[in-house]
Structure formats: C-alpha cells, structure tokens
Length: 209
Ligand code: CDP
Ligand code: CDP
Image (cartoon, rainbow, N blue to C red; front, side):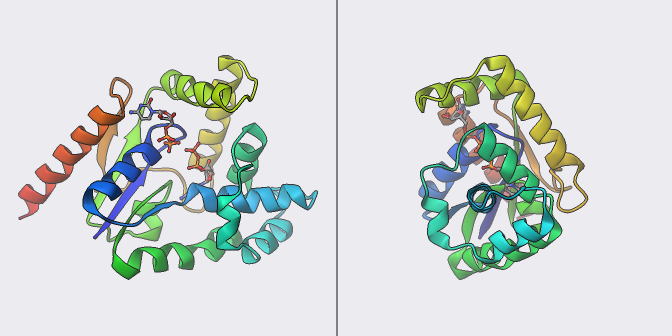
C-alpha cells in the first residue's frame, strides 16, 4: 500500500503524512528532505544550486544521513532545494531511492510528484492545499520558533516564488494527479485534516470496492 501526499509548501503534507503512516503502521518518507539535502551540499560547496553539473554531482553523492542534518530549513535552503529540484539529472538520481523505500513494505511519502511520477500507481493520492496566506502564516510561525527572523510578507512572497518555480518546471512539476483526492486544510487543524483525509480514503475504497 502506497499513499502519496503531494501539494505546495506548508500545506500540511508532512503533518498529515506522518499521522497517516502512524495510523496505518506504514513507513514514512519526507521526500522534500532529499532535495533539501542536495541543495545543502551544493551551498556547502559554494556552488550555484541552479548549475546542473554541481547539483547532479551533489545528488549522486547524497547519503541517507544527509537528510538528518539540522540545517535544512530556512529561506536559503528552500530556494536551493527548489532550484536543484528543477534539474532532470537530480530528480533521476533520487527516483530509485524513493521507489525502493516504498516497495519494501508500502509507505506514505510526501512531496510534489509522488502521485504523478514516483508512484503513479499509488492506491491513494492526496493533494493537500491551503490558502497562500494561511500557508505563509504557518511557515512564518515555524521560522520564529526556530529563531529565524522574517516578516510574514517576505515569507509569503518567497513561498509564492518557490511554488511558481515548482509548478512551472518541465520535469515532474507540482500538479495534482488526475486521480488525486483534494484536501484543503485552510480551515482545518492537523487533527481535523487527518480525520478528513481518513474519510476521503475510506470513501474512495468503498467506491472502488
Ligand atoms: O509538509 P508541509 O510543508 O506541507 O507542511 P507541514 O510541515 O505539515 O505543516 C507546516 C506547519 O503548519 C506546521 O507547523 C504544522 O504544525 C502546521 N499545520 C497547521 O497549522 N494545520 C494543519 N492542518 C497542518 C499543519
Ligand atoms: O516543506 P515544504 O513543503 O516547504 O518543502 P519540501 O517538501 O521540503 O520541499 C522542498 C522543495 O523540494 C520543494 O519546493 C520542491 O522544489 C522540491 N521537491 C520536489 O521537487 N519534489 C518532491 N517530491 C519533494 C520536494
């Protein structure tokens, strides 16, 4: 059983995917961390995240433990992740790892292209969204919690630019799979979003039974 959870930044994908994984006793993979770790390696090397040669070398050298680093979140890391993620060679290098992770005993994976590219045959696909202002509010709060300084307006502008880049790229753009279930979490807290997702999943399996 593969559950794909895709959507734009700070929509609540990770929060929901983690709860679903726990509830269904499935492994969980935050695929955004893979792109963040590649971006981090490129930044550490003093290279440009938009440079295909540098980004592909970083993706090929990636170690699973790189995704456990504590310095993968923040405006520079967001931008670097999104830039390396637009490079086809980087996506190709990360694809096999994601598929192997899911194939062992099923999994919940969250990202941008899980339901469209990584596991197009996934049994359940959720596309999680929320109003941009609400997503910016959530990310801004997280940043303040980490001691990172920024205005809400700056967070919203950077997020809009990143979502636009993710949606406009040629390879694996951010777009709902045709068979994805849409979940808008603007007015839902994590618990309500989880219950709504379970209802959507149950409704779907009843329909297809
Ligand atoms: O994975 P993604 O970037 O889509 O979002 P997340 O990390 O799950 O959630 C971003 C922030 O919004 C976290 O601080 C969550 O606690 C919060 N959140 C929320 O306020 N309401 C939800 N329904 C889901 C998440
Ligand atoms: O937590 P948030 O939603 O802000 O970002 P993330 O899921 O950690 O992803 C960071 C960046 O990695 C995204 O902006 C995408 O450019 C890229 N990404 C991707 O292209 N495909 C995925 N499956 C996951 C992330």
